[in-house]
Image (tube, rainbow over all chains, first blue to last red; front, side, top):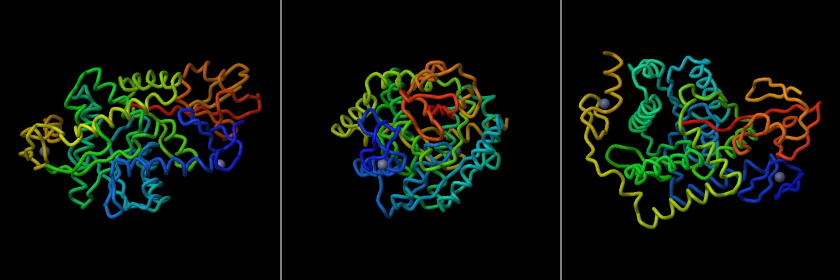
Length: 301
Length: 62
Ligand SMILES: [Zn+2]
Ligand SMILES: [Zn+2]
């Protein structure tokens, strides 16, 4: 067995891309340090910021919530109840979030699609074939809405390195320039949108899960029933096959992409479309009626 | 032996090491965490019939 680099204890945690063995006691602190480094590198946060973390009950968002709290940030959670009945998914994930907030002594908000006139993702999935895209739009809408209403100036999401590399790969395959322009670990505020940050962007999905396990985070292990056939899982698996053969390659890929953008200043360019106010709800949108109001109309028709 | 794979019990015939289990489950090593008697272990870790083995899938869509 290998020995922990910091304390010499025997361990089965070996981070191949860093050639680093860490025991289960030293590992969490190392991850927190990596996240702190990413926050500083991209100038994501200040200690006087008010942070809203989008939490799903999964390993990444709960880990992020805990890490930000430990690093001394003023942070609250936002849980969006999607009303997914399969395997009691939404009820169980909500329970995990509530229990976790008590454990780390942090406040949180709950938004329920039902209360908002959006019924549930189960219902929306019957109308929208691209359920994940509709769900994403709803989540972004309420993250922004709550942050404006409750005075949070930064929204943090638990996107991990595998998520980001998968998105980058997908955007490259599609050669989607507007998405490539916007993909960055920090998006400045403006046009009615709050600043958005992704502090776990260099923490791999496996590292994030190991952090949750080694710090005793009780997260929902079930996959969202709508993402089962998502292309992103297939991309992730294949990219991880590559990572298994060439440890560190995904980090290298992502880091080079971000570095080249930093040099060119592409990340601040953002979208070239004009921002308007939604004619129904007043939210910032590129269309006359925002996507969420459109979904509401369609399901209540 | 019986192992836990994502909280479900699965039977695997006499695995000698973690890598045998990974191969039988046909999973990519980077996409799972393996616990032996509650501790995270590497692929080359030996496995005995009395060990409690749990494999946790870490990849999710989104
Ligand atoms: Zn140690
Ligand atoms: Zn609207």
